[in-house]
Image (cartoon, rainbow, N blue to C red; front, side, top):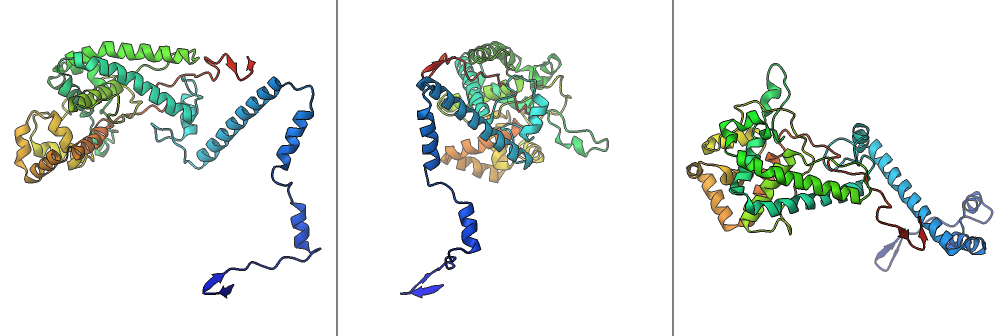
Length: 367
């Protein structure tokens, strides 16, 4: 290291003498000049008089396709071994998900296709719900209350009971079953569930048609009731706020698996509960006060109790002064609420996309 004019200059080791062992090793691994290998390949193609431009274009396309597939496969393999690659909607590694769902439609889609299909499905479902909500009486706050009631059956404390029963209930669409519809906390929403049935049929039909147009020979899964109820609550809420679900809204995690039977009765938090009871209920489910309050403000039938706590009153005043803060906390609380007890299917709504669907001609060659 040498100092020069107030600055420090780092000097590397002296160059090896000609004929030394270091020089020999460098000469042994020397590579062609930059671009030389590519030029040799281009010259070889040009000298091959039997190759037409169409053949060259076709080979180039297939070579690029193969190299892309190899690159993706290598990335997946390394990430899977490191347990670093997860699907968007499940905490399980990609490899484990594939082994579980390998006979499902869309089992072979790559992560980029997954993201694209989820966006497509969101747009289809959101579009049908946007068109339907204005014609459904009591859509707001009814859909939001329905989503809350479906999720509120989650019993997080069952895991701590002596018999070791696993947690159950939650946002799983069980409110659609007849015996739950008869319960006082659900009966009022029976008309809303009936109004969602034709919307569900329309979403399923349009999604299946889109999958078929993309070359899928198998129909994708229909939308689950758990996802439908959650997305309906989002669309109704955004429309009530005066926003456009089409332009914005907030994301909804897809893939909730429907329950196969009713949840136990007597678990839900009554919507006329006082503020202290509601705060304790949300706290047990790891939903903070600033996250539960916006949701509870929208669904409670006991709004008078909201003014019984000084801190709550101050937070409500802050929300009035800053609507953006209210919406942010609402989204966080609603997302946590509608994930309670949910099992998320990592391959929900995917389809078998053909890479050649709708592409009769590519470049200068046909297939």
